Image (tube, rainbow, N blue to C red; front, side):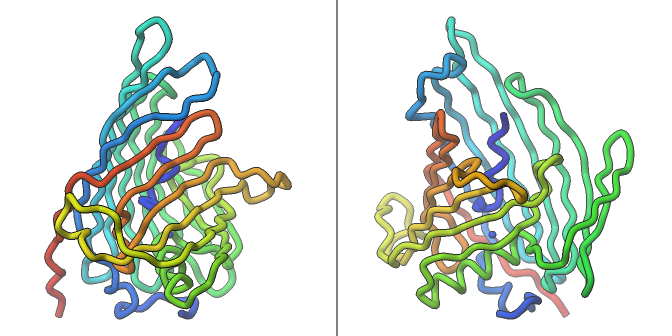
Length: 264
């Protein structure tokens, strides 16, 4: 089990191509979130847990560099614990045609995992490779969005007053199920309730529930859901990941705005 699934809201998202002017609406920033495991159902393998995640999104001259590190301690029966650490980084260009990614995870809970890859999109399809002990070729249809491309379209849908936004999205942090059907249910825009962080004061946010489904699944129940509060600059003020048998609640504890890239 990995909590890396929520990485692009961190988390977790106009026209088919995303140009520089549209991408520049996102805020380059570093954010620290506290994590707490809650609402545990009677599953017998988990009693609690806490941790932190450190998220960074930085605008470069050609696209977005994103990195997220998390540390979490799972509390198990008989006073045992399991530590997990993960580092996931990506690059996505402004045109929404190139995406690269690298995952390194060490977990006493779910095992170790390490790989990297890249994928490109053209007029007919999208294809690339996954590299670990070997090189694996991957190919998908062209009607699939990359995460930042999806995030921009989601924010645009919220600004236009849309209530439901469903797309197929490529996620490189799951090496078996790269494509997810992502359905976002967008609530009414309102003021952020946070009063502890200066940046958040007075900001308008959308409460959004995002459901993730396997691409070829016929089940009505999603694999997991994320409830988030996000502003028009792409900053997630808080979020909760619901896995069904337990939840992870994340609260923004610190944010640092990064300078814009100086490009010719």
